[in-house]
Amino acid sequence: MQSELAKSSVGIEIARNHANGVQAEADGESYRLEEVGRASAVKTDAEGLAIAKGLNAQQEAVGRDQTAFINVVRELSQGTQRFMPENLALTRRRRPRRPHRPRSARHAAALAGQWRVRRGRGGGQVAPSPEQRRGAVANAA
Image (cartoon, rainbow, N blue to C red; front, side):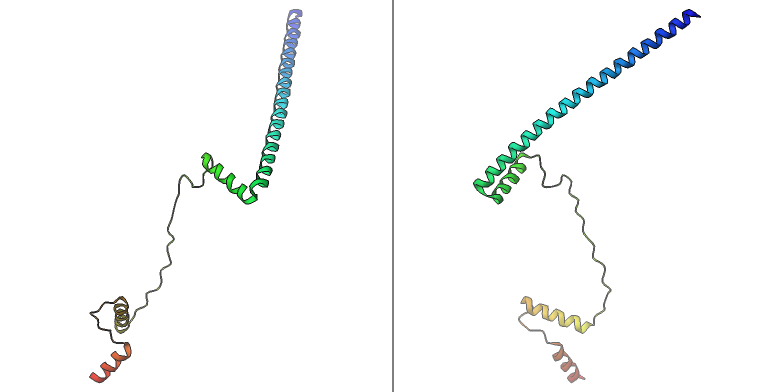
């Protein structure tokens, strides 16, 4: 019984030591990440301030609009920014169908005659107007 009790207390001590070791390792990793993060933030801040100073100097030298144009061209020329999509999908919108409106043969002939005259076709003859056609039909009857 005493041997089992001794084994148990030794096992408990081992587990406690292991847990303390894991906790110490986690604390060390946390500290390292925190310090690396701070250093990275300081570096990013310094880079941002340097870029801002450079842009201010550039604006004073060439003007605000020209500075914007220069920076856009610079970014596009580097090839990291895309201004056209890689996959371009174009679709054609279908118009709604118009209801069919029947037209008289006389109306169609008048339109065809006007079209011929406008286009310079028809053998140099001018197609008769609808009024002339009506008169010719009335005289023939």
